[in-house]
Image (tube, rainbow, N blue to C red; front, side, top):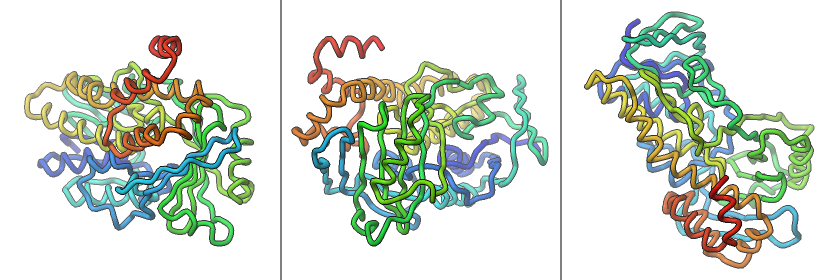
Length: 382
């Protein structure tokens, strides 16, 4: 089968790209190794920043609307600091339903979706890309890899960047009694344990997503720390199905494309290194990937060099600033816990970032003014 574009992966990045291409009349095929809907380990926060890139009504799959955040420091005895917003901070979804909705949108736009079809090899030639799956062989002018942090596309096209990930653990748990009702419209974010990471409780319609992430690649005590956090919420970890997934941290110097190949979403390593958010940048990069495929098909220039520039300017430069903030935040927890507890406007900065009302480059400039100059120098050189 000869196509204009093959998209590997039916997550937010892949479905966004496929829908955009199909609406433009492009012959696009999405290959998804799983059968949809499928569980995806993710806290499931669709932020205000993410909504800017959604052109589908996703409210039917929203489980809760978050307007309040409780920020806690595990190492101290102080009460959580609360931030309340007049407008939604995030919409909580189960990724199985959210991703399935986006896949249905892409199909409705005219994209072909092959579920349960695994890509086995990719061969990039001068005039086309050949993809072999467990079912067939396909040719296309260009391929978009949207198949996650350890996906086959980046690995087989020389674009994989190892050792750029943290790790997260998550469970979907029933809370004792009526505790879930007490969390309606509210999430908990707990810093301090683990080191260079945080724990969370995100309420869904029937369960709570309880998780913990660390931006350190190895941490021997991580599972024990997670077990203790879950127990503090009234949940025994031994009774739960535990999910683990990598966090492909953004802000790195890397290639996001090569001739006829583009990476988007987690495959491109575009997760926020401060918050761990990935959905917003998946949607954004999927949209950019589609635009650059359209431009290449029209011009005949498949170098994709402009995509590299676009991702760097629009997403990765912000994630690099987020990395500076992350280094400061997790290196000086006592300093920032004091700031959060005594300065409501610092909390407001952070959640305005989540809502897409501020950019990381601006907030980093503000934070630098609060830090000791020697600390800033070390962070700028990191």
